[in-house]
Amino acid sequence: MEYRTLGQTGRTVSRIGFGGAPAGLKNYLRPYDPADRRQRDDFQAAIRTALELGINYFDTAPGYGGGISEQIFGEALADQPADHLWLATKVGPCGRDDVLRSLERSLNNLHRPSIDLLQIHGDTISDQMAADMLAPGGMISGMEQARRDGMVRHIGFTSENMNGAVETLIASGRLETMQIGYNFLFQHPYEPTRPFGCMLQAEAAGMGIITMRTTTSGLFQRWIRQIRPDDAFDYTPALIQFVLSNPLVDTALIGMRSPAEVRQNCAFCDDLDGRIDLDEFHRRYLAQP
Ligand SMILES: NC(=O)c1ccc[n+]([C@@H]2O[C@H](COP(=O)([O-])OP(=O)(O)OC[C@H]3O[C@@H](n4cnc5c(N)ncnc54)[C@H](OP(=O)(O)O)[C@@H]3O)[C@@H](O)[C@H]2O)c1
Image 1 (cartoon, rainbow, N blue to C red):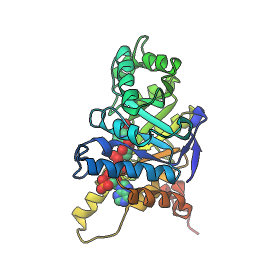
Image 2 (cartoon, rainbow, N blue to C red):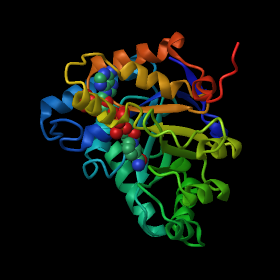
Image 3 (cartoon, rainbow, N blue to C red):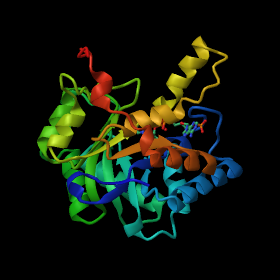
Image 4 (tube, rainbow, N blue to C red):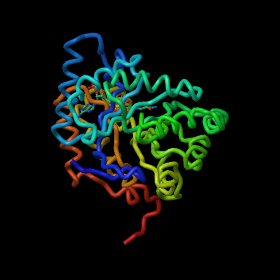
């Protein structure tokens, strides 16, 4: 397993992280019911396999099934010492006091007195929302309070959308990590040729960079099935290698459901020959020999 230092947190995290959306959301990406004990057991076996193979980053949220994803991680990781893990959860946009109430529920679900990272769970964050979050008495002040109180070691934000509010949150200097949607289909966060993108801004600000939807949440594969129904090629390794080829990505989150998927993805991560030169890949004006 490859490891990175997650920005100025100074902490060491595995290059791939275990994404917790499929654990809690019913029928997320394929038929699945978190209430089914057998399917939950498969999930927990996948989490234990991930630990054995060196994955130490686990990402969950109260929004994934109303706390069910957090409970599944809490059970599976119960006997793991805190210094072995990077355990991250989220809180939806809300007021300062609601942050502390949500975090208390998360800690209860996770069976932990404290966790590593609390992130604003942003789908898309508007300019007004960012201004409210950053205002005195806004939700970020609640997250800072939780950090002072020792309930959480670090604070950050997530966003699906690369917009002005993301730039504002980075520039505030108050958040230590950014989790952003980035994959072969959604490359705006890193455009190396112009260059632009919030990953470059976050790196310059010393933030840890976590990316999500590494295998495109199944969209690319669904597209291939539409246009080439007989194409049996497995594109997953190439999609994972694309994201891992980006040197700014500290941890790429992958939703995984079974020990077999975890083993495959760790093998892709270990295959350093599968990385490409992204700057070369994006070059538009070829120098003729
Ligand atoms: N705003 C936010 O904070 C936010 C938003 C989105 C995601 N996230 C985080 O990012 C994580 C990753 O995103 P995601 O789960 O949506 O998408 P993803 O990682 O792109 O895709 C997950 C799916 O990929 C499939 N997969 C994984 N390994 C595979 C392999 N070796 N071979 C074939 N298929 C494989 C699994 O399919 P099967 O289901 O068929 O097993 C899994 O459900 C989430 O779980 C969550 O933790 C955060």
